[in-house]
Length: 259
Image 1 (cartoon, rainbow, N blue to C red):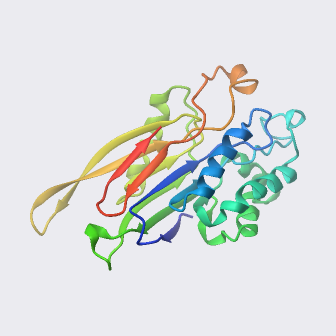
Image 2: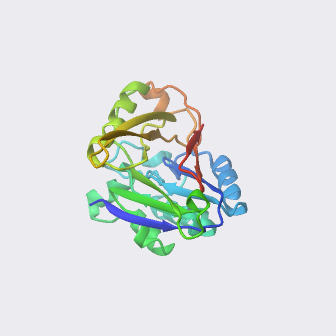
């Protein structure tokens, strides 16, 4: 069930940066650890930089899965420990987290939610949901008023698109706007592609009988695994590693997304 998470941040922030991280696949030989550590160091050094986690953080190869257990660099239990090691120094910067299909393997087979274990050990139980999270981020001073923070609404879920083409993956992600309304930014992972789609909806103000345009973003975040082995066998194209950067203004409602 979708969880609602409220992130109350400092009213002193003029802006914040959010990095939506998905598809690390810790334990896979393709995982690019050094690139991920660079991001973690940046998050640790900057007070106004935060993370959202969108699943497939562990590769979690088991005998019944597509992934080859014999190619893993470490078993699932060690993957979980390694993930905790990575995230512990930035646990206070994690705004919300959801699971992916790789973590769901263990839940389906034996009822074990490995990301719930990670969330509990990091003190993030209230920010975790296996399926989806509506996240409200509040910070800054709206129009420079000292008593009112500006708010941005996100909907995050791991995603399920199996399309090889960017258009198919985006089409699937865009449907989220029909599922959850009054959201500024929709984010999914899974497709291992970085795509940013700015769009707009029209809100009918029936008190003043006018249509008010509202800016929206649909974002597919990328992966942290290099192109080889499984991707090559399946015919997947190489993709830019990492994830987009989302910049939110703390004085006026403004969203920018950079890849």
